[in-house]
Length: 168
Image (cartoon, rainbow, N blue to C red; front, side, top):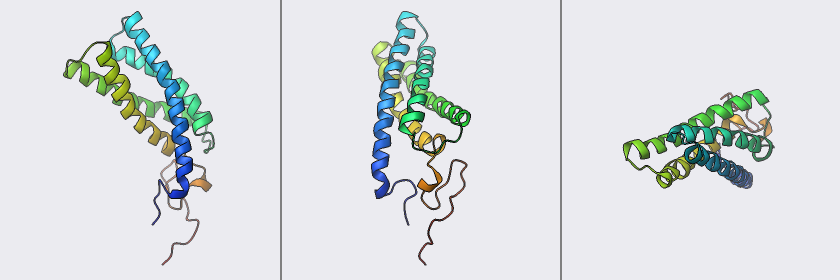
């Protein structure tokens, strides 16, 4: 039985998508770090508010890069649909990031610029990024029907029709 998500013939495309996702994520990360630290240091924003505002700005950068470059070869399911799903999954990713920061600052008592950056911008971003990549790949920018393996679910969760008969 073939794997639904990763097969040897699909590895090169997966590696290209991961590389592009990482590049777009790196650019968005720089934007997020700059904005978050600006809110914290220059505007004296509370920890979670500064983090959330920085992530919101970076999310716009990430959407544009991922839609038009990382997953540009995938099916277009409508700008509004993609935009809404992208921001919903980013909100969940932000929740993961804020949970890491909140646990560090409020539960463990690690506060200060270095501790905030490690918890929110290293650990939180790392965990959130894994979630985001999988979410974008599966639901926001789904593969074109001809790219899905037989039996793989589409963006709506329904299985694609079989392309070839399974051996008995």
